[in-house]
Length: 161
Image 1 (tube, rainbow, N blue to C red):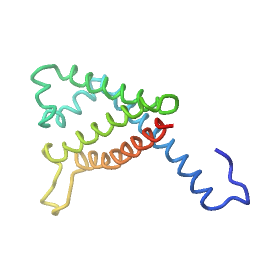
Image 2: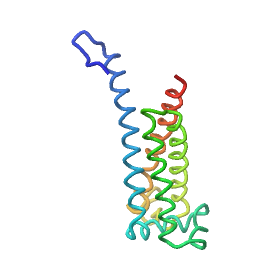
Image 3: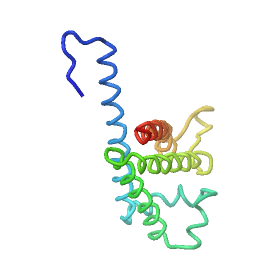
């Protein structure tokens, strides 16, 4: 990346910002998956995600098969693998394609909690009212899903070179 000079155009600056933003999106997703994945190995996080996961038609069955700690550890392991695959974008973009697909699947799954978790919607406060937790906590996953779709496109483009 070159520094914009006084003779540079807005298009040049825009391209530089877009390039930097793409790297920031990958860094942000990697940080989210590392942090969330690492937290899944704590008793605090294992208990905190149970209400979301056990109400899910996709994950609820796991609590009948394994302990709360095991389910959380499995989710954490998947998240850490996704972080590693996304980090590969800078040296092996084909691996980042797999990581981005994993990220997309993760956020589609967590957005499904929006309709499967009790307490998300607060109709007594208005038709569109949602709770802070879990509602607003889950709503951020719309942006993370969009970032993951961007990461997929970026990794696909980079792996074609």
